[in-house]
Length: 452
Image 1 (spheres, rainbow, N blue to C red):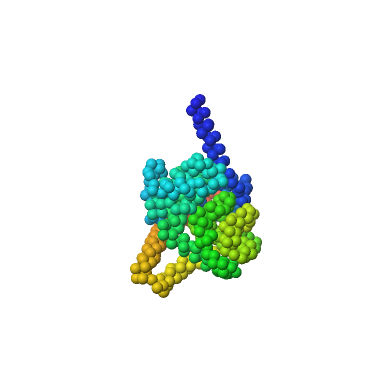
Image 2 (image 1 turned 135 degrees about the vertical axis):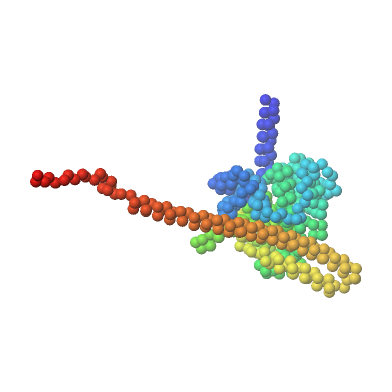
């Protein structure tokens, strides 16, 4: 009875803990029938080894992700990612068990502890100093700093880990953080040199120039670059400033069906951080700035513009947030982002060539640029190897299918011949068999009487 009471108490505590974690306002509540669809998919036997129909997943995500299943759905999306990308990144860390990492000491302890109180300070799960939420968050960040020696701990990671922790257990949140950083590729922007973040700020500036020229000119006039307001958006996935309901949608659920005339075009499932990475951040940032452009243009000095973007814009209401999310699906910026990254490196080289630096300074800059380019080349080479692996896998699959098709054709031909032979046999039997009248006994004929 004591053991049963303990189990019951533990179950009640887990339930209360889950309710406490999910204490945030949703942008759009999920319909009951949609929740049923998700529950059916999540309860499928052998789920982690089954490639689900993309159309079905598109439809489910498009209609919403239920809050109480959100963590499980994110894990499900990660499983589908691994099934689709069967050749993992070569930058994968050593597979050290989470409990083993927790036994070790980290040199990042002080920085992590300082940021714990700044991470979702008003949310009830994290508000208590060194309470259950802060301790779990500390464990995840400590374990990751030990796992990824290059990144260690960087400001912003606590918010990403915190969002995950609100929707799943501590160890599951750690695994999901590792997935986002290594498989999806978010770790690039947290590297110590922060070069990738600088490139992202340049890319966002160029996108503003392309999509909202008047806003770009207004910000340039007041010498306001994206680094003054957008760096936290990228490093925390908007979590440091925006409502949790909005951030959860950015993490996994940025998809809706869009009507085009009488038809419906489905937005790709990749439009979320779990499957697309930072490209979603660019889309959301661009949409946020564009949708609030008239209000930003009303401000006429650096302080009020930056204050509006950093403090007022994130609190404009959930309805406005929903409109912003819907606008994200209209954009296709992948090619522009690639072009602007190349453009950034070209400009950096030109600056180095034209600046009056000493030979040592120029060499230092060139070495840093070369180091960054080498890392990017390694990343591209890795992507190429993964792509080649996929091509080989697809070619092998095609070969198997062609072989299977040939065997099926042969089997069909054999069956056709057997069918023809059987039909011919049946026909012969019909011809050879006597009719019912032919089966009667012949009548005996008596000889006619003679005159004798």
